[in-house]
Length: 125
Image (cartoon, rainbow, N blue to C red; front, side, top):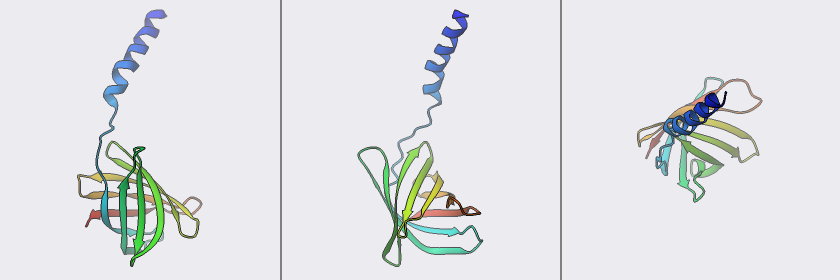
């Protein structure tokens, strides 16, 4: 039993760090956003600005026609950007994007409590 426990501990110590997919990807920049709402309607007039923070997270500001609509915070893990955002009216949405090279993201977003899932593509501008 002791050998099995030692083998398990060694496996965790040796394998888990090797499986860590954390990659330092710089996502700071300004992006044009196109997407599809959960009802199937589309949009193409959003922009976002992402800045990096000292704590390893990212700060996100969303704009439409020059007006700030929402603010969010995100975390890059591997090739995924996970985001939680609060809108101007106090609503929240969650999003998960696959990082596509250094040029943008593609993913899905969800408003808790509402049916459906939206999709978005972000491209550096």
